[in-house]
Image 1 (cartoon, rainbow, N blue to C red):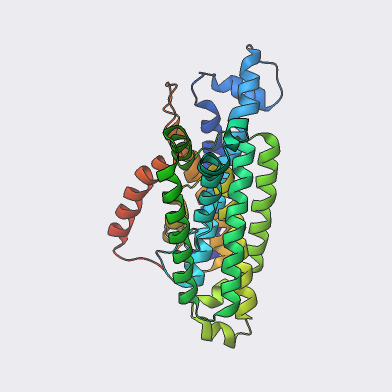
Image 2: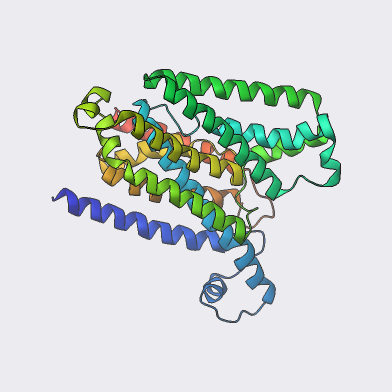
Length: 343
């Protein structure tokens, strides 16, 4: 069979699965809304209950789009890191960018209590948390960029990124030790991750950042394919290693940093989805993998959010826990069945 036809069929299946998961995601929640009424709301028809229209348009649809952006962004950033470092265990957070976002949130929530008492004035909310986390991830990204300009060894950069993560994690631990129980609980709740806290304005901002990261990733496809065979081979093809590494790091920072800032640190997706995608498409060509991981990551995050809703219940489980509980056994089973990893 023609590989192009095979890829086309696989992409068609993924797209249909994405649409189905999007529809299912809108149907589940603490408030029971008939699927027909959900479709009516999407197409602008008048609903039997006006509150359903508000729930669908101001909560469920933004949450579903957030899941698509978060899943696709994390999956693509994980692919970039695994290719850059040629390491199957690399994920979107190996450069310490997520840890930087967590540090920003921790300083706002717990550091404000320890140092200035700003939380008593109500300055800690969803918007300020996103801004603080964004600033933290940006500062760590700048530090990584400075280091990247000083060293040539990619593996050394990986180790330095992990050290940045350790440093920021240590600072968060110190803040946790000195803060009160209420603020510590607030930070822990943020660290669980959430897809349902974004307004349409925040969702628009997140979309813009993710799209910029995707554009940079697409521009790096040639470099990514060259990196698979080593830096020396990439250099022989005329790839500017320093420039391409900058672009890949910036793209990862935009994708992983923005997701962590707006939705909290979400595990597993960035590490596992690239491997699942390679097993499905049986290729390492990034012209295929880049769009594929975007679709695969979005589908997985929508499914995890459906499970987190506990259909028929008012409880919502932490999305960070669901992604690992559901995803890790699938990866283990897949690798055992395939008996080897395609990389």
